[in-house]
Image 1 (cartoon, rainbow, N blue to C red):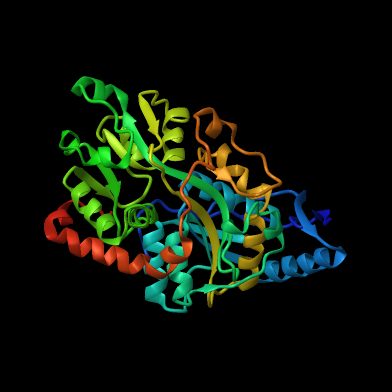
Image 2 (cartoon, rainbow, N blue to C red):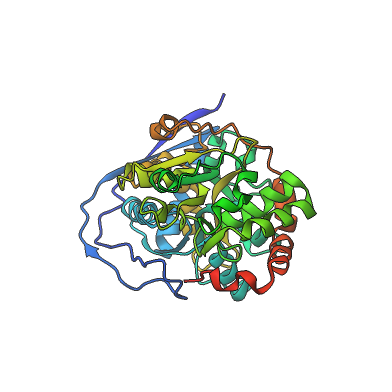
Length: 392
């Protein structure tokens, strides 16, 4: 049995720290230069690691010193910005490394690093579903790293076998509905995927953009795996007849359900919980499709050829620790966590979400074929949907 090793990082923060630079979801090419400055007193920070002996501790000591020598880290985040900001700021507090971050959808990050082709402007990717991560890994754009803290993952399902990405959370795909609007229209809520094709829901459904959102790519893979290749693509063509808006980001539909602008949103149900719990939209109902659904693994990874490789490796260790992932629920992100040494967000189970009640998702097929499947769906849709696909 492996021994748990608590590593005390004392006196790392004896210098003044430059605050964590942030940006909005604007899709700009470079991280914001906006930073906050402040003096942080010397303090102790602890990160729990798992290792066979003290050699692991000395190895992490060396990594910390190498990362501190680099002094900077650039993070592209595809989780919600509140969680991204909190994670970046806490990493900086722990290690005295200046962190810049930018919030981009997973599809935007994938496109960005493909264009940069081995000379990335960022160091690490944080959050967002793994389908675009797998595409990037297959294109040789991610750096493999064997993380010590990966020993805390509850299953090998939540990591790339070669260490190109590691899971940090799990989210269930489903529907969020505005109960007030459905009642006003005299409509029942959809209970399964096929229900969404009913013409009574025409103009009421929002989904995210297949080109820009990892959530939408997961929907494509889910339908193809659920119904078969041709039938899955035809399902999405039929679904398009009822879709009013394709948002840039996967969380876009959830943010408009409570107001009634979107009556039925397809996305991750933890985003609906955020709207209910944090924003007070008690009129939102959460629906797990009755015939089964899939799930995302929210991940983190290193960009190959990044400018700060040691800080990037230290980020991976940090991202796989309670220090980082427990910040999610404190900042409006209520995904299930996939580490064995953390506290799960109780609110997720309070809403009846079962993280095990999901289909057996074929990650290997998604890794190999997502790009092709998206191209096939877009070709099948033709120009009919162009004016509804948001990119800003």
